[in-house]
Length: 414
Image (tube, rainbow, N blue to C red):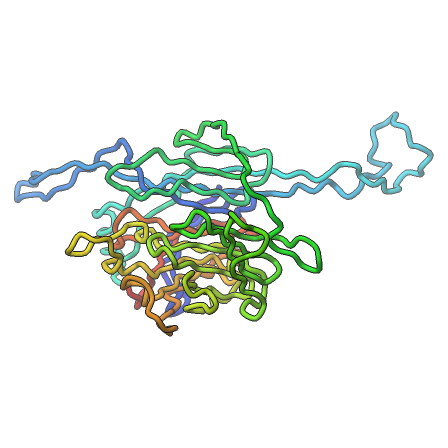
């Protein structure tokens, strides 16, 4: 594991600077963060009087964000062995020395989960960082990967994983992380899990054969509605009580390539984002599904979509009713765009209780991150409950790199 130094300089006006970088031993293809959890180290805060005594002292616990990088590697057998490489005394099967003998070994897969505990930036450290560089952006966070706190080897590669998401900073629960193979608790002990299949159907086809289904998701607020996207350049909406045919289908008249990612808005129950290999993010409203509300080009095939974590908080208006209008981050989306790097999008109209009735042009790319030298597959927010010190972490496959970077470079709004 290599740890590199900080780079505070942007390559262009909206290019985000990276704050920390590591190299993983295996190919990194998944990166997921959880909610912050409290550490056991208290922090002393206060001011000093003329005698250098601390007054108004309070103590609070430093919080850390668990971050898991999932790695995958295909181990190919050597293509051949040579007769001349055999040990003395082995039979030569009548073959002359130096003749290639095809290997009978099969390829294998290996993987691992690497857990990092990303510390909460302290105000004093943030202040000292700003003082050391007058050109620094106040939104810079000094977050660092550090050394992994736990490494869990897997018999197969880890293509994806998810934390249990329940945003309640006042009453946190033990973080749970699930991959395709196991469920892991906060102490990372394997826990037996039973999976019960309730529905199965051929959702997508190409040329009369089943098509690769890249993504699926429940519609938030309706446990009977499932959305799916596949190689056949289509998005389908299903009622799982009746799966003979989809209730809606949006095909190649809209999508120019396979549909690879679906992500529902955390508190706007009918809004969801769809990503495609055609390098566009589309925002749909399930109530009028035939036409997307917005289309935004992100410069690369879309592999991951993450709404800003504060979207999981439902704000309250003066009458005590649930309302999202107080959340200026309601429309912020983090995108891992493969060879295009990562993008932060802002759908401005989603800041005020959902979209307007007409398609709006108020969708923009806030910032870009292109330091990855291969496919950016994983990305997630580092958010400690305050938007002032947002950071983003992302990883890429072939170059085995992971970065922490500032999503709001100089000249962009937080």
